Image 1 (cartoon, helix red, strand yellow):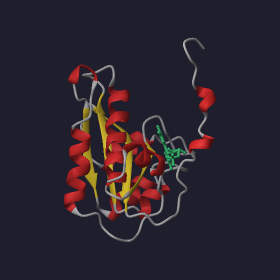
Image 2 (spheres, rainbow, N blue to C red; image 1 turned 180 degrees about the horizontal axis):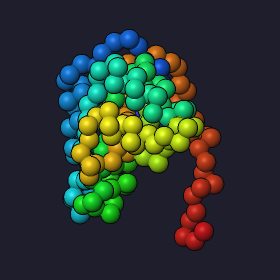
Image 3 (cartoon, rainbow, N blue to C red; image 1 turned 120 degrees about the vertical axis):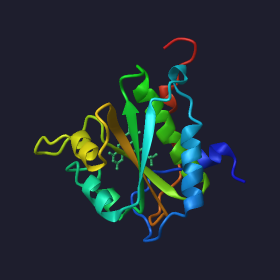
Length: 175
Ligand SMILES: Cc1cc2nc3c(=O)[nH]c(=O)nc-3n(C[C@H](O)[C@H](O)[C@H](O)COP(=O)(O)O)c2cc1C
């Protein structure tokens, strides 16, 4: 069993995946990790859409000009959606639940990458949120925040080097 800091050290964004589906029991664990996320006032403003359909993933991949293309070769994307009407901490809550999924994914030996949807558009000014919203038939009150793409790792990423962490970000007692 890997200790938690080592897991964090080795988790890197993975954008290339093997052509191999993710087993249902692994998807279930990743979703359980999502559902155990803390949220402001325990309002749980998130909803998840599990996408494995290749055409849908390809259409989501083109919702932005840059940064979302990796979804084309991803076997799985979990779309984190927010009910922005019931909570004023939905952005934080959604980030936490996406991170929980990415950590569980790493613990399962799989790779993942956050693909931002909220506040993103194509070069032609078409909103990524609207594209994904229509594609997934989301109800009006839900906003797609990000897609966590997940799959078996097909690229080498170096783990973080403890010697090279930006320790200058840390201030003690006062800035
Ligand atoms: C809020 C947020 C948005 C991100 N959006 C994207 C994205 O749209 N496309 C992408 O390929 N990576 C995206 N990433 C991944 C970052 O580029 C990545 O986490 C960062 O470069 C650090 O690398 P690491 O994850 O390997 O540690 C995003 C990460 C976060 C936290």
